[in-house]
Image (cartoon, rainbow, N blue to C red; front, side, top):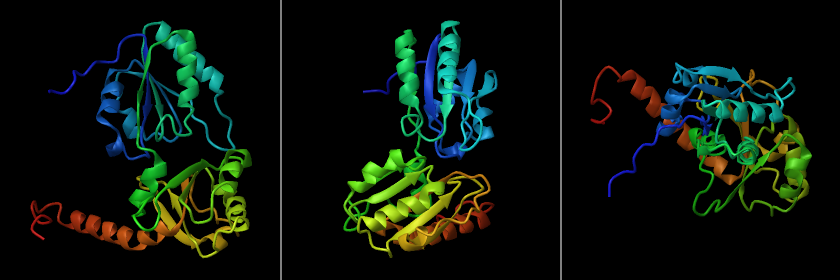
Length: 272
């Protein structure tokens, strides 16, 4: 059987797209095609400018939300999507990561359903997976972690009940949007019986030029995080799999550095 035909984005339709963790190279092929076809792109704060360049013919409207800053109301975004589609536009709603992972994609999809507007979902690579992976940390690993849990750290209501129900050391814990809540989250886990020497990674700007990170213990994480991210988004990873990052991350960095040195000598890496 051949591949299914590539159906273009129709006039009057909305495409809810995940832009991935930041690096334009991690955008899906379908997402890139939809951007090329778009008449209007409503994009979030963490979308890389290079991604927007894939929509040369589209009007681009920023509707991003960032912690502690004035934000466009979700209801207004919903109305923009509906109005533009009803006018016959090819509309792209572009979000960082995946639209259904703390991206309010479900809310926007429901608003489109209520308005009778056709839509599609184009999944993206979530930073919940990408940030650890790019640091050499597998969120699951045989014999170490057989499950992972992702929570939002923007408020205690978003994570308290989940963490209170999680048995100590039973899963890798990934916290998005939680740098400001690191102390409270670590304290809650320690009170639940997690070991103070459980490794924790704090990762900034995954897949971008601002990428950096550090490894700490859960006990030290309970003392807070020194703010050094320069506005880059952060991901916290807690669990024994973090120990693997020292080896795998270093090897990935060495390989990348070697690749840079041999970029002008085709075949050099393959000949190793």
